Image 1 (cartoon, rainbow, N blue to C red):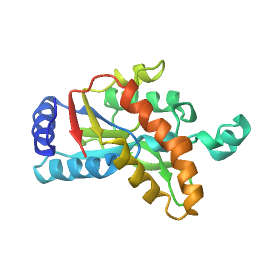
Image 2 (cartoon, helix red, strand yellow; image 1 turned 90 degrees about the horizontal axis):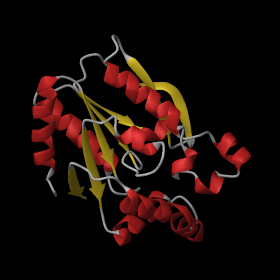
Image 3 (tube, helix red, strand yellow; image 1 turned 60 degrees about the vertical axis):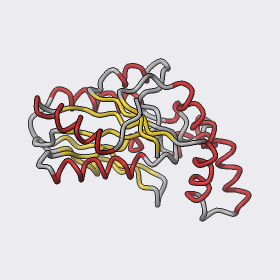
Image 4 (cartoon, rainbow, N blue to C red; image 1 turned 90 degrees about the vertical axis):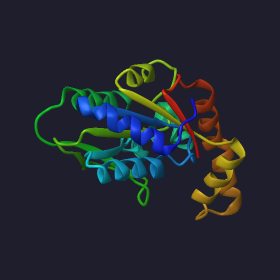
Length: 205
């Protein structure tokens, strides 16, 4: 069912009355997940519901590991993440451990993750986890999807995604940016669009 951002806010606010909820905000690269996640968190906060955003990208494998495995050209594909580490974090969040819970944050300036650079506070009622593969219908990732209380898919047409992704890599030479987008990013986008589990709601961005 296609919903608006206002519809999503209403649903999340209602579900959070019963306690902490984990929200999956999944979608292909370039769909606008980070912007939407921040907007939802700000909207909830404005209504008195404490919320935070936990990006999945903090669980990127380091470039040194990717080079060792020969996976560097596919950085951002499902197999280039620490899925076990992500699952452990989500399980801790579901248990509602006392005190703050810290998580790694991906730094795009250095293309690497910074350990314990983000935190979830005890009073956060809505935890919005955003990332490409949170609903991916593949081994390991299905276990991730099962940990969420609410599942949201953000989508956009492939041609729109391509333009946004080219803009993301605008610091590269045009041919290098095109090669990166067509050789990796769009493959990942098509995988998300074709192989994701059903979401509770879909938002077109």
